[in-house]
Image: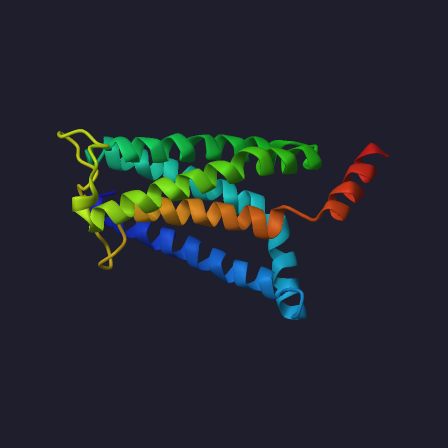
Length: 194
């Protein structure tokens, strides 16, 4: 696969993931007033964790491809984003494979959601830094500055933006569909004990 194709594919996947997640978030907020929204959220509940796993898994593959095959040297902020994204893939895979769904839900809530939130903040700062290079505060090295823009698809989709889309998508998928209220969790725990 050539670099242009990978850039386009990654940009489209990032936009699709964040767009679909935002639709899911809106449905979640309107689910109390709309049966259609509630049904939409319930339809996503069984696939939320697999989808949430696929996002960081592809992001991990993409970041490695861009740095190793396309020779885009990652800056410090890119490494910080990777430090949040790579464990997300592992945590979500373990939660996906776990037979005890209550324990998996707790792992997701305790580990995955905070990683996604921290990663989102770092990605947002990095993305804003690309647009405002004067904000650089010597966070990055001179040889690989954080203001380097390797590509921009559709005029605004860059590597930090794609990471931001991934983190936001994971957080929304997990919070809007996978986590349940306390009563549902207690019911599931009781059923597993029986």
